[in-house]
Length: 98
Image (cartoon, rainbow, N blue to C red; front, side, top):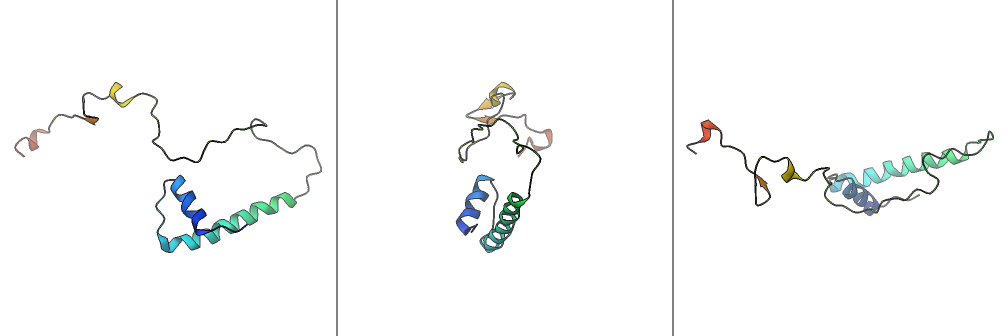
């Protein structure tokens, strides 16, 4: 399977990784090697029963979308004080004059 530079950039963006442009081609080659290796696993003879399925047989995949990671509790519920979406913390004694 051919892995393009755009594929590498797309995966890096989904994983929220910064990949410098000079490393993209190298990573594409490494990913191609991994995909080829995994493809070889389908050639292994498994004559001893049904194939192993991990998880439910009909698994819904999530969409490839980037968004904020939701918190279990809203920030305002555990922040001591919030103003316009920012935490308000007491000023340190040594910085009172600044």
